[in-house]
Length: 620
Image 1 (spheres, rainbow, N blue to C red):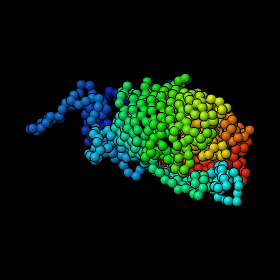
Image 2: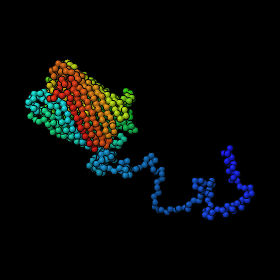
Image 3: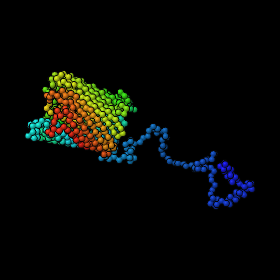
Image 4: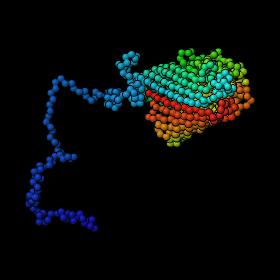
């Protein structure tokens, strides 16, 4: 009730008394007498304009007219004379520099730098270069790769080669040390707006200089002559890239689908993980994309170069090998299912080195391999492959399958031509959980079950360098195991290789389809503890797929198939969270199984072999 009566009370209190209601003039005079003097001096408010308000129909007086007399002045262009869709400003590189946002430092390999291709070359400053226009870029890459590697592996010895003349052992001490330093310098000249589309022209040269030192406990491991010592210091300069790339057509200007041709020494990897052919070789390659980059293709022909024995680098001062590789592959995204990229590939390897006798730098024969009848071989092999990489739901999947078909002109067991029919399969599935990745790996390499028939069923690659099952952290992939007693200067597997192929050398030897094959089952995990630090662990169990070939070469009735357990761990530290400084430390051990112990031994009769790899990579 009081709330309703309150406004009425206020109205009653504010109303003038009845006796004053009819005397307005007297009230006004009384209010003026009661008003302070400082308020009486304030001028009245202009009723025309009040801040934020305007009385309808009131217009403020205009300012006085200003007349300008400027004879000969040029009138400014009207607004219609300027383009409405773009404005002429300095290019984006010089604009940010003029605004003070970037200060180039030649010694800074991470921030903007002309020598890393972050801004174009000014042709006036390099008149000796045959370039015109403002869309040429120069890129320099400098890499230092340092490796320290203590290791143990079975080392065969003889009476005339042992460091200790009092011993008559078949296998000697197994410890050795490797020190390797590689300097890589790459230079490229590119034309085009490289941040938004592939360059239209590219010239690239990459040189690698390697210095290596190896110390082993036994003689005739590093050199064929028993009189030479058991350590070696060597160096070599190789040309790893030297090509011209021309981007000569573009299907879709909005999506930048393209076709390019590249000629010269160039890197090429035939599949996602490098199982078949992963090398830097002399060749010509036509490649490009279509359908918004969802389809990619390669057509290539490569003429294999000779490699330096101790560094593995390309040797351009020697004649190329009579070994040709022809490649055709097609990539398709979202095939067979969404988020999965499928690749179909056909590779033809034509080898005509049957009449060659090649001796490596250390004096060991590498072609033909000293197996069986010791004769040279010519062969033709066609690889049919399917590779997949992507996701199936939450599972990351990588898989490769190859079928090798062809003919070997001289089987080193029979001396007759043989048909090649071999298979290979590898797959890796991984699952990501926050900062952890768990991996499951499996590989199958078919072996030859009957060396004396006219079929060679052991699979072998052209030049493998796989990133799989721990890669070079793994003992079996990293280390070379000499095949003592069954062949001379021949290894069961190759360095940085997965396959058991009984080749003299991955770099200089020929493919061999008379081999025991491999079966691998592995588990692994990666832990990204911080953006700079990663821990990895791998455990692989290995077997020979078929031991018939090694039994024949060793003249043994039965050899178990188990190779053993390969256990490894690695730590990678990137102090600046970039690839400019990478430090890696890994350790691996092979717990020899029955088959490995049957074939190999060491002076202490130990069944464990190990490998440690310390690696520092600095990149500019």
